[in-house]
Amino acid sequence: MDEPTRNKDAKDRATMEAIGCIYCRGNHDSAIRGADGMCPECRNAIEATLERAAACPYGHESNCEDCRTHCQRGEAQQEIKRIMRYAAPRMVVRHPLMTATYLKRKLRSKAR
Ligand SMILES: [Zn+2]
Image (tube, rainbow, N blue to C red; front, side, top):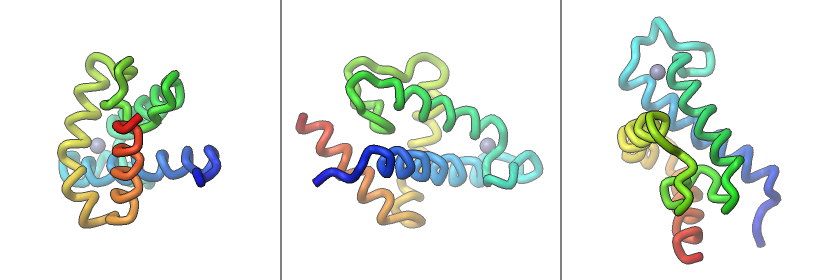
């Protein structure tokens, strides 16, 4: 029933990038934003999160906040939490399908 992992990785990336763009648009100067819709700072935060998610031994992907190993540590964790908190309610409006997929996976990983 599960979609291929490769597809899931691409979706994770797309979701995180959408989150990064929303946060950057609302919080950072458009002058420093690149063609990808994110400034270097936001791009770094998103890339670091995707990297850590890929390395998670429990395969928690971008739902790392639920992970008991807490892959996301220290400052990077604080930053991505801030980004998520800002972007989450806006994601529902802007990308309802993406958000539904994310939440569904989150619930599944909680049930595990
Ligand atoms: Zn930014």
